[in-house]
Image (cartoon, rainbow, N blue to C red):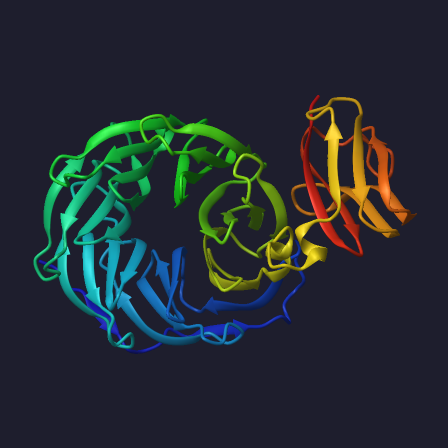
Amino acid sequence: MYRMKWCAQALVFLAIAVSVVAQDSWNVDLVSQTYFEHDAHLENVLVKDNLAFLVDSNTGILIYDVSHPAQPVFVGQFLTVSSARCVSVVGNIMYVADEEYGLHIVDVGNPAHPDLVGACDTPGECLGVYVQGDYAYIADSGSGLRIIDVSDPVLPVEVGSYSPGDHAYDLVVSGSYAYITVNALGLVVVEVSDPSQPALSGYFNGWGPVQDVQLHGNNAYITDTAYGLFSIDVGNPGQPTYLDHYENSGTMLGLHYSADYVFVADSEFGLYVFDATDPSSLELTGYYETSSEACDVYVSDNIAYVACDDHLGIYDCSDAIGVNSADGDASIVGLNSICNYPNPFNSSTTIQYSLASSGSVNLGIFNVKGQRVKTLVRSHREAGDHSVSWNGLDDIGKAASSGVYFCILKTGDGMQTRKILLME
């Protein structure tokens, strides 16, 4: 037997607002940073009803009031025996994935005093948890999918399991299907209409080790630690289909889907924001280079909460998600247009753009970190169709390295973005 307990005493922390050293950013603004005096390592974050649940693998779950994002306030803490890895909250019940000891069920009706009410161990390392109805679905690194009946939170009981043959990391459940990220196998879809007999439905073979997964409608989004962000059509669960991917040189870990945008935590480069209005054409719309390793992100009301290695970073993404939004503002929804050909290209590409009205035009090439590589146009242009070529050189005449770039058109009517691929 072992004991779990809550701690009513706040671990000493330092909250730093925008007066920190400036980081590289584009369309994303820092709101606040909360550092912890103890040796913290945040792995996961969830925000619900103005409470942020921070998964610290070194101590357990830290609970903060974020009703004022600029000044998070410590509320309570739940200590775990081994490394906490993931959290899910439904109503007043918190479900914690404890790596070595499985699922813990905690009453957080009083978040200052979390109270353990039940537990159910899993065979391997409990890494992910998702709750739907009366069942908690567990991603267990050693044994795959575990399904636990939590209708009685005091006495949770495992009722079914499915082993995909490799390490499971994370999962989401929608309707009769569980979508599981499984190491080098990719995205595995398991039918769970009968929780006692889960069965393989289909899978998408990832290009490298996969990490996190989010679902919206018929589209799944996964992070691949080697090849970046993928969008996948899962309208037919038996045959998931590739739609698009965004590759970078970092390591993408956690992600969150919110209102047509995908937010990604990259351990090397920080927070990325992508427009996923068209899942077959992911477009980068914002970026913030965090001061330490970004592991996970959760978004609520245009605010991104990023779990970094040693702190909680809170960012305003209003500008990033304003690009191509459908809020009725003609300057945003895109009266202008931009395209290029050929794409991909290896020597030169022609960029065509159409202006709805005359005015100042700023057209440039940016890298995946939001840094300007080449200025193509910075002058007045009349309304109508225009074109300009880019030969792959930067502003000082140096050849740009192969990879993904963004052609960004800014006018008084708004901003348009086009992803282009330079190949060797």
